[in-house]
Length: 311
Length: 266
Image 1 (cartoon, each protein chain N blue to C red):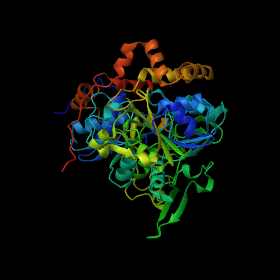
Image 2 (cartoon, each protein chain N blue to C red; image 1 turned 180 degrees about the vertical axis):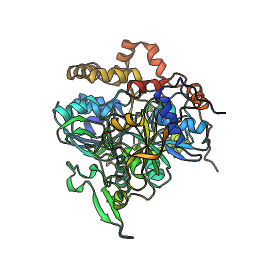
Image 3 (spheres, rainbow over the protein chains, first blue to last red; image 1 turned 90 degrees about the horizontal axis):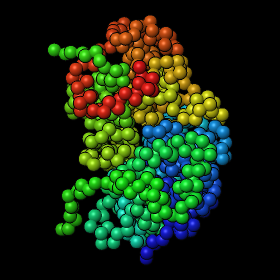
Image 4 (cartoon, rainbow over the protein chains, first blue to last red; image 1 turned 30 degrees about the horizontal axis):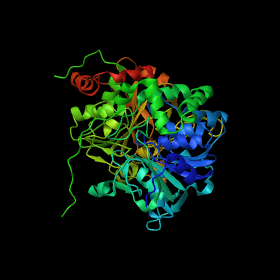
């Protein structure tokens, strides 16, 4: 059964106010087409998570969509601290979000535990630090110190996470949702599989036969997938390996814009509210910066050797 | 014979100090900038068998341009293995395979504890910082953590506002009490003025060497805790001609390292 629909339909159907979302990406493959659609549809009270968050999370926070953030880290990378995030925490603009803080080991492990149907998982980090002393909406269930039932040594356990919906952007998927990704993974595979359903945004929809030519690349199977949306250039200004590079100029532009509340609002008007969808966003980009600039981002091709699975 | 040209800048000296901490065949987890340059100098000089990984999921990448983040697209082509955080932070780091990790922070204290979470009160922060990311697990689980810091009373503190990443916590025995793996913890703090090494008994950072343009007195004055001076304290060996050649000709032909001067590493 085909699950192909527009991003607007997918977000309308499968993202509800108050939902807990895993949003994949690691500069690699942030699902920006869906992020912008969530902002356009003015979704509210979301809990969002992933390890190493960046400009996409900052935008959702600045746009007022977020109530809670299960965080390990958020910045604009090369361009420093995340502005909307700081305004939210330091000045309550547009409102103060609640943060539960983990690390780039513990959070991926919590998602892995969720994906594997485990209730909790031991981790070896966090102990002895102030990350144990700050607890927010997860409260006393943020972690527990137990004695190892095997040798009595102190062990920290952290709870499994099962987001309502995962939104990921991958290179290719078929119409049913078998999703294939390659390159830097972050916590995408585990976050997607921990969720109760997945929205798969992809650079291109391919046939089931194409998926079957290299099935080891599939990270999410069709039965977990609620919607498939085809969004070429959908991770911009992030990148998709083999498709296009990071747009550093746009990253800088976002930092400059988000430095002030007004600048951020203008940015949202220009790039989110005043464009209907990703197609209009790309057209606007090309009109503003020229086709040459757009073309410069496109990846060169250096194909791997074909692999064979036959016997 | 080893020669030491005197036209180096401070970040180059610091990168060389980092490189000298890396041994042949070490497994090193790196970020961008300094750490990656330091590790690469080591690979091109005395530690050809050292292997690098990035927390995002990359092992043994040889990028054609300097990576600007640990998720940079240039880390993908040519890597020996790409997975994700569970592979690098879980399978390799928590699994106990990582020898060296590099860290920096907004605040560092005498036990090598690092703050990248908040300046001021946690609930009413003066400045909200990014958070742990991979820093806490790297500080908790690598055998030798190398800390990079600006040597002033803003970065250095007797006690950090918030311990994001464990050094030796409250001092001797603290890491063991919390069950952190044996033989892990900070090894050195490399600053723009000196190299501080952790005393085996007291776990305090002590002055091991001072850079050629400074003195023991100046370093002690710039340090906000009562800095102990090691018995064998000496001047830091300046970069060698070979280290500088690797850095300038092979690793960083555009001298991107100069941006660290603007960040206070002078």
